Image 1: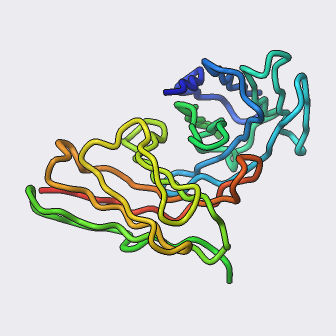
Image 2: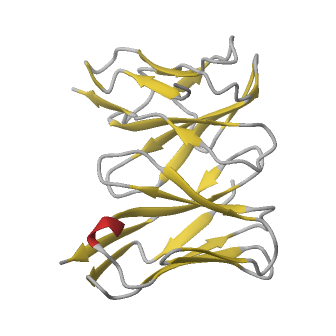
Length: 108
Length: 113
């Protein structure tokens, strides 16, 4: 099946540092979505990117969709303790695949 | 309130027993999905359904079965053939077409002893 890999698998940062997670798909995606899962919780939708090269911002979060529509990134500026959780990218029209996730720990 | 409900939140079963996990949504979504999540790992697709009375296998369907007799319901049965069933199971739904956000249930943590 489709492979969606994310790096890094884990990231520990000091509060105030920036954080980036990268998502790579084995196939071209029609769109890509990002989700956040808090510890002990379930994934919650953050954003969807559709166009090649698209960039979207949500406060301190910046999302990019690659030109070839096979990769994406999520960048958080000046992390806060509330950013703790696992961030997943996801794609696929019928078979809805999730990436392997990046677990973010923010050290106060 | 509209949403997607999974029950129970925690489930314990003895090895060799089949167990059915419930997933109900009142969002009027056509597409529904079951995922398995192991500690520190991503979500792996078990089964998905795009419409009532139709469903397809995901990457790890062996040892699991589903039904989709009603639009609102997509129960997952973990059979005794599943070699390592202890995991966190998540159900999701969204509109058909692949261009909308998915909503997740709270999950069921299954422990087989």
